[in-house]
Image (cartoon, rainbow, N blue to C red; front, top):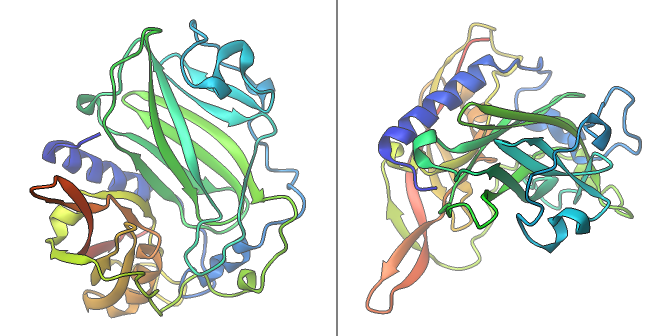
Length: 321
């Protein structure tokens, strides 16, 4: 969904309100190293993780032929079910479990996959705002996140149902409450995120998830400069920066960082520019998870598109609890 400037402003206001209202788990460390234990999946789902199951309600659209073979009505696989309402629904695993990979390096998501969303008899429209997905962990510390679904949205098909295919990225293993929001509709569910069968916990699980050493780029990419406001409009995934326990509870302010947004949409080469210096590392620890739409250059006369790196600044705001 291509957001207009007005839509982007409204979206950023929504992000600010969401993060300001999300309760923060008390920290015992000065950065996101406290989440390192979430890189190691627990063997057993905790009893208090009440995942969403078919017994909580299965949504059946009026038309069964609304998407690809794996989701089609009577042919739907038994390990999936539809959940939500006519105005917004998605596809969930019947056992309430998402399985992902144990992180191989700092900053890797433990679960990073596609997630389809549907509406009946109406397209997803820019005038109604973007579809957003928020997540918060219920059984331990983890950064809350908001993900913004974008792309070109087609009109409803012959069956009257529209689909938006986006992604969902989970920073650490555990019990997560996920909420999809579009227009005036909310669909919330709980999911247990654990590792793929047969995986062994790596030594990385006990190491900090954040590294101060940026990864080496695979190849030299074209680099452009964008101002902070323009680049902020391309933000599609954001986690909540947290005030370290070593700082007073009244600490607040905005940290400005220099960054290079790579061709994968992730920030690297982070460095402090201004703002409360005591919050600089916490700002970097949050931004390392952020994702942006990938910048591309249209190279005439061949109409080819080349991914670009972006040299920019990022403002990270810390709100008082």
